[in-house]
Image 1 (cartoon, rainbow, N blue to C red):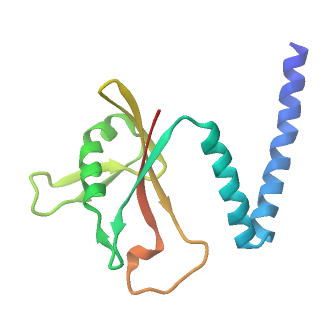
Image 2 (cartoon, rainbow, N blue to C red):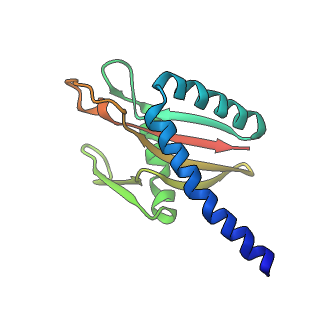
Length: 150
């Protein structure tokens, strides 16, 4: 019992140290160096992970046309996500048999199974670090679904 308490105490002091180092790394390292280090850390994780990931972005093209694949996934996950996800997003759909479309809110996860293979759908959103001015409102945030399976 004493060994477990010591392990938790060490972990409790290690986590704030890691958080401090990450904040310093994120704030003071040049952005191109951060990207370089993060890309190699991602390669290391991908090398050790047996999972495959697909990303489906919400908008495609230079004029920010809504992606048909993203819309189809949103419709497909509508029923499953409303049962499993804790945070949902509702959108009013015109010219459709449904008047309200429920989908996963950001940072939500839903599991699914297709022909015996377990799938994980994640809803993500990224916002740029730097502010840019654009006539397109959608350019500020990028939404996407990430499909992961073994």
